[in-house]
Amino acid sequence: MSETSARDTQGVDRGHPQAGGPPRPTTYVAQVMAELRKVHRPTQRELITYTIVVLVFVLVIMGFVVGLDQIFTRVVDFTFGG
Image (cartoon, rainbow, N blue to C red):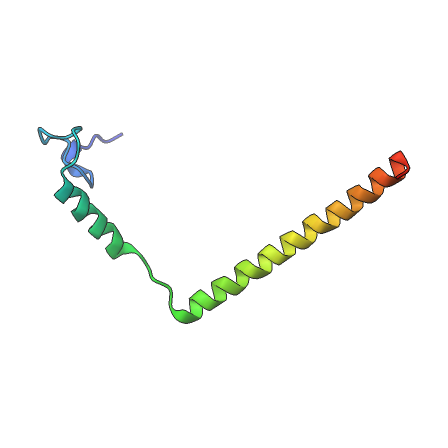
C-alpha cells in the first residue's frame, strides 16, 4: 500500500495552517466557479428527450399505482362485502 502526502491530493492543501478552519469567501467562490466549469449543459435536443423520458416514466408509474389501487379496492370490497 503506498502512502501519499496530504499535498498530493486534490482540493485543500492539508498542510496549510488554516486547513480545517472556516473557508474564506473568496476560496468558496473560486471553488464554486471551478465546479460550474465542469457542468455539462444539455443541448435543446437532449433536454427535450430527457423531458419526454421523465414524463413517460411518471405516466407509467401513475398507471401502475392506479392499477394497484383498483386491485386493492376490489379485494377489500370482496373481503368485507362493500
